[in-house]
Length: 317
Ligand SMILES: [Zn+2]
Image (cartoon, rainbow, N blue to C red; front, side):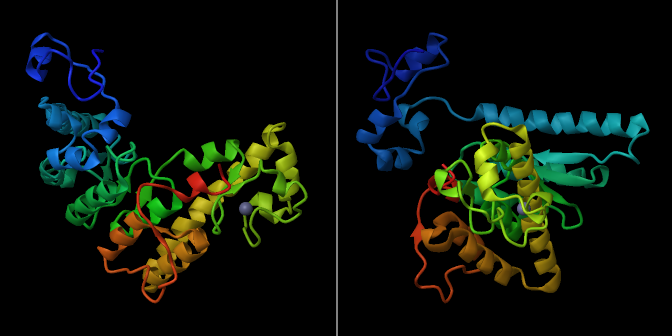
């Protein structure tokens, strides 16, 4: 890769670089942050546009490939004789571009009678959370109400609940099982890093009242701390707990929606999960967009800007 530390290849214009057939260059975000600075880059619409480089046709090509792929899947699905035992979901793509998402939504919705549900793909790849929730909302607002919606790759509790509030029904993620193998148990008071020595003499379960086999059998934090790096059984025990935790978060949301108490469920969950650490600002903004104000009557709560998750700064690290 030719190096464009300061957003410019020395001695050549961007067009000359592209004309040479070079389609990969290296920028340095640290230097770009110093000069010209993030405000200028935002104003320009990103580093690529600032540099005068060609952007995003690849996302459009990929989106249309997804549509063609769906048509092939529908054709095979109908001719396979398995359409009564297997459900076909259309996956909405389009990256972070609202226009591409909209075009993709139109194409997918036009095939509604041939699919059992809709997935929202192309997210959870490190994009800004403020953009993430807006794409989810754009898709959820437009997708047919009589089809389940599945957001792909979502696993943090706050992400799950925001997605549900925006109109999503299902999600998948390796997070609860992967983090368990690293000794992190998920609880309604936030994540717990059982590798830390403060748990060495703690005889309480991961979470009191949790119905999972690990907590219900009285397995202590102390024994899990003792075993986590030695015995696969400890990772197994925490994995069981984490899967039950995720199911309880989503099951609680479902019950609250059925009972008409979902806004209260969200407020209670966030207050307990984040405690004094404060709420992620993007969650506050996303939930306000659907009429739930986490800060209502809570002037004491801190709001943290930027993209972070509780487990990143808590004792889970
Ligand atoms: Zn448990």
